[in-house]
Image 1 (cartoon, rainbow, N blue to C red):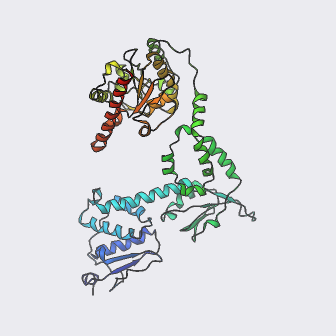
Image 2 (image 1 turned 180 degrees about the horizontal axis):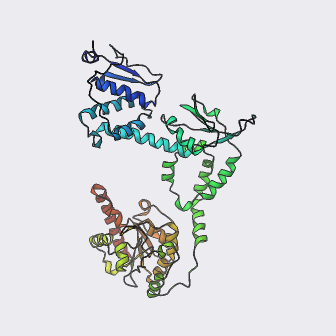
Length: 478
């Protein structure tokens, strides 16, 4: 009886994987099964230590493909995803990959179909494995283990708890990075050992098998504390990149709560310490205009651009502050004349705010960009650049004396407050300023331009609501 006849009779094949990450073995078996027309629902893929399907029956010996079997289709994208996805800890990954390989035979372009649930599932497996590998590269911390054997020399040991079967796949990374160092990486899934010449594998380990610390960690903690930048602190992003599950193995993690708690105070000291000396504050808008054209206090002013002064009535009740001039504003020498400015005009008119009655300016006075061929691509100003330009925006505010200041975007808000705030947390409510005026914060209109569909509609609704609240507050203050 041939392999094909076994399939027709309902034979159920069980493939026992020798290793949980053995792509070559899986590929060999999968190719043979496809060539013998064995459908996905007639195969059970079993990991090492696992048991076969309770409902498996019939012939279990691997079928032999016929001599005239057609070649198996598997494009580069499938192979790349499969090599990574097979490292996932999901027991169904082998079956999922075979199912997608099976579908590839009748639909060679299926990998281009982002809506196909099987393609999306394999992509998700690949993404999770890549993330786990990234965490391993970032958070493995070697600790020195003293040895009484002088011939052995220094030996470094690290403990890591991967979510997936990534240990062997990442051996090369650590071998290249620490090629001249004797080290071991211990995990609950297995261990790696490098003696500067040969890589060897070992059995799974426990946390107690790894050392708890060494004298070098005090030096590392001091270094980490010295490079911790409170001005760039984003706790949500930090926790996403450095989940707390890894903290127990990282010596610097013990400092994080204290560093985060004192971040705002340290940021204020940095701003104060880094403040540049300016001449006496200008007392007219004309003097500010002249001064900013000659300002080279930060790298932006040294670019091939032109300073853009604010415009509007000197006694305006409303001051509108954006981030920085764009390419069109730089060429025209006027604020908010490009696409973002045109969109702003539409929403101001809708809210019943006369732009001609407002003083419109930017927190940063020069256009920051990077040259790409003939194009100048916008770049966000850095915290220090915004803080340096506070001198000019504060000078404008001191002369205009607006009752209400509308900051559009996080950079504009920092230019007025001297610290970074979350727009979603402060929008819709007044923030008292030291001169008795009020600061209101909303999104920058360029943010709306980067969105489309429902997301843009929702942000436009919030933007309109913010502008309507500003108009009502201006009426109260009139």
